[in-house]
Picture 1 (spheres, rainbow, N blue to C red):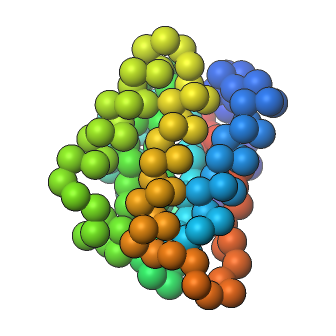
Picture 2: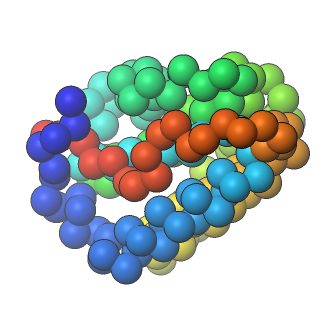
Length: 153
């Protein structure tokens, strides 16, 4: 489904940054049953980042977690659009303004061209929320890959 990698988007992140993002996701998921994914593409297919994030969320089967606690960070680099899309279990628990705060925090890093740092910061904060609402008290394994997903053209 997402096998054609967008070379330009991939080049925004060094191998080291990709590894740091993957590690941040693993750390965030250690204390929760929740799942965090990052999807990066060049252009926002629909022009509306939230609509595109919802589409990607479902395509990546993020809506198949037992507690409905998947969270997707969607980024369209050239269009300079981003959205955070959370499943109903997580969305219903988080206080109003949290998602906007995460986006604002990421934008601050992005304006300085510190893309990886912005993403890692958001992953950390989202992980803390997930752990607070959905602590990992079970033997549930990590169901979704932790690597960044790059969209096709």
